[in-house]
Length: 359
Length: 176
Image (cartoon, rainbow over all chains, first blue to last red; front, side, top):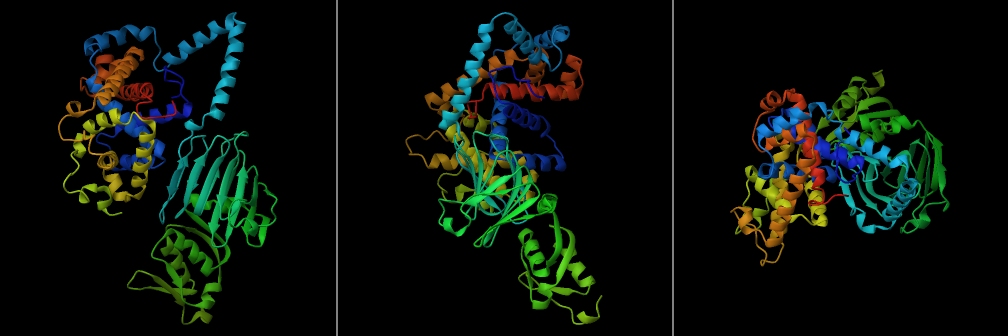
């Protein structure tokens, strides 16, 4: 798929995006529901995808207006003649290969020129603020998840009810979370640190995978790959709140909790922290109130726990985040609690009458 | 989200949007010419994206492309009503008769790029693109004319289109 475009230089990512948008245009006509669903999902990946599709559609629709091209018969003749000359799909690559060989044969000067060109390109990238995309905001609603590919190849996956802003500048790749949870897969770029700001904490990473969850009063950072540095965000009003001021290094399979008391690092199975991506919720002796709080993140109207004793009962298990019902069933089958639905849709969880006799 | 979000006409009954979904070709020609400015194109895409996210799943899946075009059309409309009345190219008649001179120039440049991008395609790929888009031939007919399978036709069409789009990259913004 890559390397099909013979015009001026474009990034592989851009080429791939163009190919994807074009492919969608060729299959949308008469597409079945499943296809349309896939397409909708593709469109919702990022604003870049939307832009790309609109642009491809514009080209698609302007093609009938071309006037200087040969007739269908002439085109078919040309295509048949070329059969022995140009391999299907590989035309561009063949030509580029020839060019490279010609360059490499004698002229050493070309190598130097190319090196200068590369250095120049690198310099331009660093000093060209106008090439930076404007800040983009991404948000999910209750029960929604969203994956976004960023300009540098990093990928951010937002969990339910989350919001963040991506503001890349020539020196930093900054992401500001205003709430919720997100998994970051930061592309490697030692020159331009990838930083996440959440709840007064700053998480800095270079080429790594980590999950950030913001909840009332604390920020939880779990590292799946590589390492991150967690520190207090200096410019924020809460700056002094987080201690120590120096960054704390968090390694693979470790988790940092940043709250008023400071930053605490513990070992943690990182897999459980990102189980949400498969819409799984993993509970390990978590009190019912915390489990319910977790489910309420994914579904509205909420469940409220009416009984204080029930609220503190520990629960272990794996549940689908979009299937609150089966958890409630589980509770009543185990004789732990029963639930009823109010007229406004709120589900009330209360103690079972004969709780002592239940298993 | 309520449908009213996508219907700015409600706020401005005196000037309802003039495009219908089926007219998206016209809209896109319009986009082409109007969004030569990269910043505008980015902003439009960003806003369209945010509205897509707000759309309910059922509505989006019914016909995602049409839904996207409707959003884009409304955005363009909103964009136009926010402009001073001096520039008022939005009307029901063919865009060519209404477009400002620079818009026509932008469209002409776009067509030039397209023609030259087509000439640079491998012959078979160019044949597929033109036979389908210009001559309205089906994938099957094209396959028969060129001696290739329908799935191969589709592949050539997609790659050919992608090349044309990349050759026209800056008409609607893009890293380059």
